[in-house]
Length: 210
Image 1 (cartoon, rainbow, N blue to C red):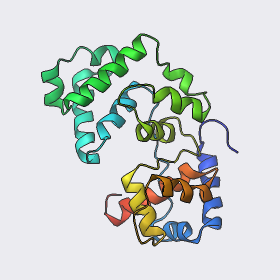
Image 2 (cartoon, rainbow, N blue to C red; image 1 turned 90 degrees about the horizontal axis):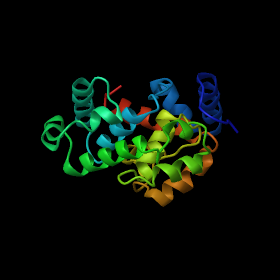
Image 3 (cartoon, helix red, strand yellow; image 1 turned 60 degrees about the horizontal axis):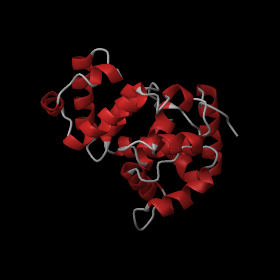
């Protein structure tokens, strides 16, 4: 079991292990090459970015995030709280996401959420602490664990792109729900985050987005 953040060496080991274990994943690598080691910097900006990605297209979330970074420069909890509702709406925030990100900024400034502590916390502890925050549900927490904390066994069962990719790669009759995704993911432990990158790589490659 890999402890802590996934390294590039660990990632390559995980890809090799999964390609030997699962012929369908081996085929993804053969057809599209190995997936990039997608990752993001831990911290407040990445959590805001993931909140922006909730239930919208990746392109629109990215555009809003880029506008926010340009306007804030640098993006910190303090600088975020300086924006009023009208400014955030122009940037691309809904009222709900404005509320979520303001609450997140206050939680960090008041010490209720220690993002540095998350980097060394166990997976379950990190998930529990993140989901205490309003607006951070299971999907947001799991994406943060996978992308920012680089946990090797993170597996976002509620991710629609991941579920669609699993359906296609595994030739399933129906798109798996979260419970079925949990069951299917068991085969990839302790490398589920590596498997997720492989499935996303397939999904993006098929759409010509790589």
